[in-house]
Length: 390
Image (cartoon, rainbow, N blue to C red):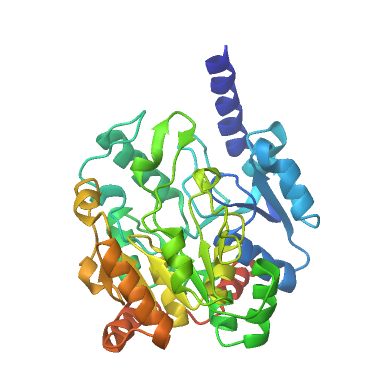
């Protein structure tokens, strides 16, 4: 019965997309397939609302997030994703602005303009560049074919840098128009990276004070976190007691885990110096931090905009690389020291805490910045808003 309803829904959607005319100046936004407003689509939404008040902007959100989204964003018009209202809206929208792939069965009206912002500079391989796809419910051939078919629907694709543009063009087999503008979500980093008043206010909001240094630990997701269906556990690769002994009294370590493992982390007894931040905007965490600790996460590319120190704790590199889709560049090129065991980690962290820097990495950092951050000028969202208003 469910399959029949789903089939009829899709048929109705596709029929509607070929029959109904588009509604001028109507924009549907979605972030990460129906989560709350965030990332580049939200930055574009804010820029459009600021400059073009005559646009009708609507956000598609999954039903389970709808109540929370309406409470958090009372001025935004929401519609439940995959509802009949959403179906009719999608088939008539003048623009779609999304940051992830949409279901392949979704048919786009020929007059709808689809702007794909994507969601990060690629470190691990994408699309057609993946040799073997191990995702439940699909296989390598089907996955690649659907990826290419989806990319054909994108009228515009945002590129954060030349490196990503070349990869996107090949991995997505993208043949339409690139917007070489940097990521709209990163505008706030460019605009406020040297604004101490803005940063101090953020620190008060997030950690309750504007004193002390902030260390941000933001690791990548690991398949090892999965225990059973709906059950995940985070592995802490350092000792919290040892960390607090290294930190000054006013310093704070922020742990930013994947939302699926947040509940499995306990910092009981260390709350004065250690916080878990899952729901906060990641850009706000970047801005208040003095050091980023990560591993293989693409957070490194956005954080580099700030030109602040990074420490790469690749404690499971040998194991992890065996399960990777493959890197697009030599991991040794990351703009900071790489440590592979706990002893090295404490030593490098202590070195930073003593001098607020890592000596000998300036050239590597500058090269990294030139390669990945050159297009970030703080006005990407405005440029997309202008494109919508053309």
